[in-house]
Length: 202
Image (tube, one colour):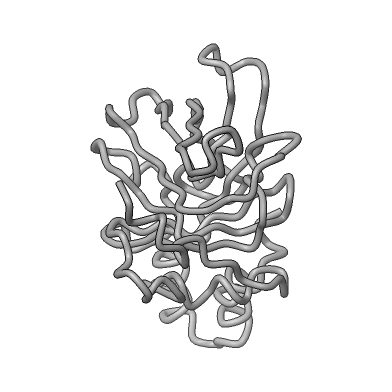
């Protein structure tokens, strides 16, 4: 689960090493605040999935397509712990010998882990009833709620990085404050999904 990720365990290690209770309380408050996942979906927004530790989309099972130039967008804010998203990425079209966008709709239900005061992860469904076709659970490891968010997929034990601004062409590696932690995710190699000129041909 999320506690297997080195970036997330950093806060725990700091907490264990600190003897001053006056310091550990605000540290824990900050830890919990940076993982309030519903804050990411209060208003409609588009995020760019610029980095991660997977080659194929972990929300697809089986995942047959290499992941690149990913986007996640919402058209409505979260309500009653529920929000729908559209997730898409660029894929080669063998018939036309070019590229085209593949997109899927997903339905997120915010959940709360033990000892948390607010929802910190979402269950991701492929069915709008929120009852069948569970695609996975995504835990929010870290976010400033303005520029970036780092997630952990508990089914595949992969991380993925979302940012609110598309990276500059040729500068899509290790972008944003959260990006520095992608390489610490379960000691897996980082992948950067916007290192392709086709990402900028829209």
